[in-house]
Length: 116
Length: 116
Image 1 (tube, rainbow over the protein chains, first blue to last red):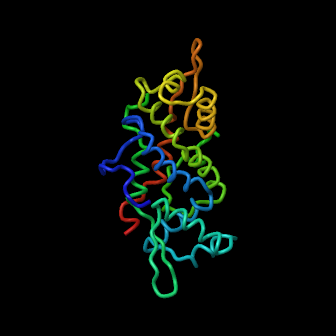
Image 2 (cartoon, rainbow over the protein chains, first blue to last red; image 1 turned 45 degrees about the horizontal axis):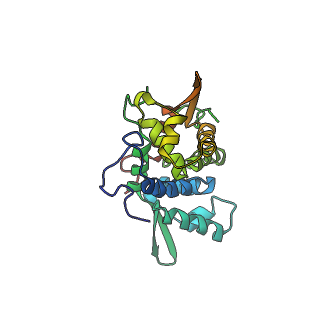
Image 3 (cartoon, each protein chain N blue to C red; image 1 turned 90 degrees about the horizontal axis):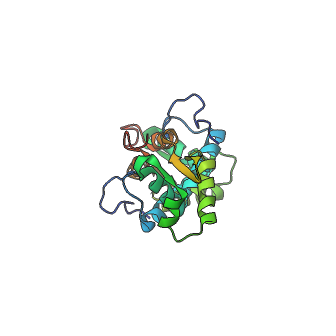
């Protein structure tokens, strides 16, 4: 799922108007992908890595988990549109998708004064 | 779980430094609460409601779901620290917790230029 969550390209806030059922379903899948401690830590390591990308070797070193388990979590994050990957030589490199994170961040930011 | 997700009160970004396991666990529980379309829609309705609060009656009108089902989702959102509730007369009124949303929003916002 790599298409924008907001079809009109407009960044929305939860408070702007009630989410439509379809849009809520797409967003829920992305939040579900974030709803796992290992996936959040993977995302954090990739986002903070020098050059903005990390290879599986960087990730396996950070966790006491098998490479297939880490690969599964990477797949979930990719399917949610939170990571992209690129194979170079014998390694696959992962980057976060800043636009996706920005969409989610905007969604969770309430307009000033909206909630008193 | 109502205590701040960042014990030092400092709003953090995923990219600032790798999330510690405990912090990732707390955050994952909150994102898991958001990982459901009905709960996202409930949050959106409450956040956008006039006066910043909504009662269960406002929510039951918006969904073809039983009141116990909606109450279950409200409980999950409250336990994640995303909503607070207050009983007045015969109704319970719900409000979003802006600080909690702001924490999550900050977490997902990457520093400009962090990812190139």
